[in-house]
Length: 258
Length: 258
DNA sequence: ATATGTGAAGCTATTCACAGCG
DNA sequence: CGCTGTGAATAGCTTCACATAT
Image (cartoon, rainbow over all chains, first blue to last red):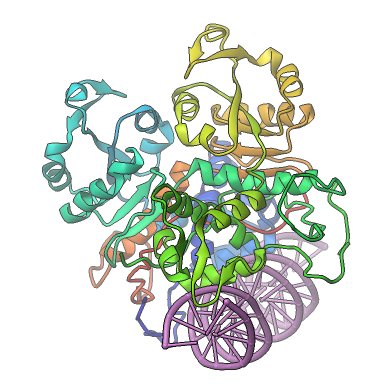
């Protein structure tokens, strides 16, 4: 997959590491808070602390964007806000549709942090005819039948799927066919999409299961437990002391043809 | 907490890579679906496709758990379901509290996939006195004043924070003080917690921003746009054609002392 | 003096490719 | 012969540590 080759030899070939991209929103949030407090400049150390990363990582991340700091001083808050916003594509407005207006869909529609940062809920879509016309978060719900028209009329390229798992793939297919190229999936299913379409997944139960794994380890410190089939030792790799880290570093990669 | 050193020298020192742990729930879900269809065995190739990863990765992942497959045949579905469940700590029951019963909290409380897999909503907690006693998803909401008592009475070690950002750190502190050691945070804030406490974050707006970044790249294929300050070329790392990847591979790893 | 920007080193994760077992 | 399990190779990410700029 992926095909592409190195394609650009020299001259700092753009190509921000994915891990860095995933942290930019974090920096942006911290910077926005500083901006609101009218803080003019900030050091990598301070900003890193506010974003919950270490300063070396932050500096390395910023180095991919360019040299936006001043040695001996730090970073200009406003300037950085602008540069990161631009890098993330937030200087333009992204119309978004939410499909599936159940509990979760309604919660998402009501979520403020949405509209604030470059995103605009262009439409809410649900399969239930009874919901049609009813306003949620001040936006009237429209019926799935009109999905394609809505996507096209509003130039939507980002879709949010908050339907039950069973409907997700079908909704996804229609979104993609209508021109959506980025999907945020809240349904607990693996979606398959053609090349060129981005899918990101948010999955409560996966997050909980990861927590349970670590939780179990903590408990298992010298406390053999469980019935279990013949399982040997139970060494516990020790020192997963715990990072104070956070965030879905989940990861869930790879390709899926079928 | 934490500390511990290598603690166990040889004999396959447990220590499953974090990236693998994050995929186990995915495999488990795919296996559960197979199990429900009474499929007896599955090959790494088939299972990988269902989970949306490639087979080499899946086999490597499973190799950390032990040798649960049969060469020339594949994996026994039921057996693998059990082994992974056990590894993730899902053979026991995890009482969970949800704090902040707004739109999102209510959606989470109503989310089915919760109870199904080892997790049980032990209590719903909200700061609004008007909510107290009102049932959400059949569970009466309790007031924040009783948080500590609720945690202790129910032996809760996993907490879900669905409050506004402003309240999150305070709620987090109280949860931790009362004995919670794993937190799933839906509030758009960086939480600071003592060593030994796990925090995972789910953040809608971060996910959207990551999508926007890639979306912008797609658009920028030879289509210079934007006002922008002096910005050079715009190579586009080429064929980030897109992995058909999904999931918050966001990542946000590592350690952070302060 | 002070804090950035970055090569180089060290880790972790993914992919390859094939030996080995059923 | 097929498919798992895994060393070895590769790629990607994080951390170190310091030269460099203000």
